[in-house]
Length: 114
Length: 113
Image (cartoon, rainbow over the protein chains, first blue to last red):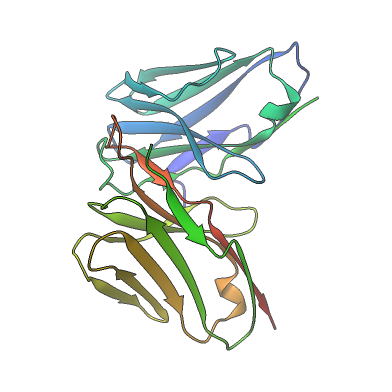
């Protein structure tokens, strides 16, 4: 499945580093999402974008900064992260922002913060 | 906010046995979706249920939506090793932003050959 791609697939960073995660969808969708998946927690929705406009920020710390330059690309800029931010970060897209739309997930970026 | 509760958290079955996971909500859901995540993989959409009492089948998988639209189940008949993974249900968020999906914690299925 190559509808939604994410890079890098794995990332190790120190707490003072700055890095960015990239997501690209090739499905012509209007909505894109960032999720965090930790070992013992459910999928946590972080951000929602609809047609490049952020429509939801679920109380995410400011050390996570999303960017959506166009409807096909989504970035997550990371800075001064904490070890507890280590997780699998999943990008998803759907045709529109609706709970009835199927979400298509990318393979994820597995992040380790040291 | 809306939470969908899923049980059990883990299930180990012998290959050939049946498996069921349950999803419950305290409020009525307009719809519910099911996803499967293989080990090391990402969630993949399986199905969506919308109607009260709806039952849908995909080969050995049977999905049900309760009459009150507050619960749902996924039943796998005669499990195979390819069924291994975590199964998530997801429903609409009940607060502001109801267009969001809120995911259950998932049921991790292990199949012993």
